[in-house]
Image (cartoon, rainbow, N blue to C red; front, side):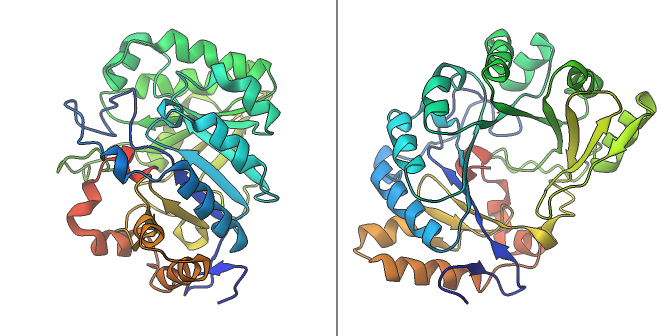
Length: 331
């Protein structure tokens, strides 16, 4: 295995780090955590910003080209903006992006532009305020919606991520597609996943990627397939004449595992080589026990040598941990 590249046992190169900066969130979305919430990690167990920076620098040395900042909600953690300034000052990665729920990201857009962060994913599951409240258990739809267009007007590339579920937001599929007619938005529809922190299973998921596509196809005849990047998790389309695009992510069906280039680091230092798999190392503990850069690199590379072939194999290894909250996993 090359010292400047992360390559798993199946020859897949990993050059994309999803870095969770917090497990906390100001939303309580039903698919992410139970209504009563979850037990957040004690703050002493969270990686410090210095620890995150040091680990990010090591991943960059190992060939990581893209870092996505996730949570929880990244902007609820105090000190996130100074950390992002430091991170963006690294000679690499080539790209830093952020996933947010949109309540706080818009107010930081001047700082984000200054540091060169121009791509933001906003998790938005409904364009209807009542359904939005039902899904998120928070009454702030107008704030999020306005923030999206503030970001667009200020030159950001914005993707909207919508988790589709029966009896929740199926009515929103076509309004989201229609939104791409007049705005250069990218809408991504996701299959529901089992990460809400409870033992509930979504084995009866009704809206898989094929059904989502068929639903859109019934309403829009002029759908143009797009050429997707090699490592894309979404299959992407444009309606003829529309400014924006839409895509469908088979996140539960897991049809993209063969080209997956992602590795995940949670806010508590847990390293995962698959969203559906168990943690394979805790880099926070290594740092706090005095491991040097070489030790940490070896631990990361060793973890990759056991990477599962796909999400189904990883799920078998994970056992009951499959129901960990997405807020803790970091997406």
